[in-house]
Amino acid sequence: MPAGVIGFRVTGEMTDADYADVLAPALKQAASSGEVRLLLVGAKGFDLGSLKARFEAARKDPELDLGHSKDWRRVAVVAESNFFIRRLFPGLAKVIPVEVKLFDPKDEAEARSWVSA
Image (cartoon, rainbow, N blue to C red; front, top):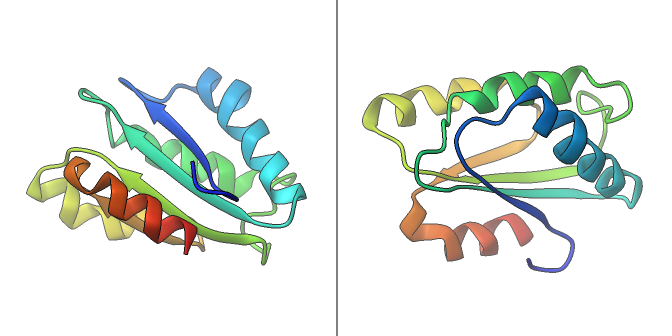
């Protein structure tokens, strides 16, 4: 991962346990260090729709202060998606007040560059 970026490769669906045990603690640590830049790479079979609930949980988490923190910078999501998902993604991205961008798997290197910029 580029310096200052936390990243995860996710398969299947991101569960409540994944959020509570892995993602939230990493986000809290990044926020406490002063800046959050997150790269989520969905492996083949990743359910992109499962991110909506996780983003909503992150937004409501008082320890993350996602709704008000100036420490959040960018979130890059790399995943296979069809036309329908690509059209819905901007609505999903509005759930969190952070710059979020969806990348195709072939553009993972671009996503890494973008999230770290």
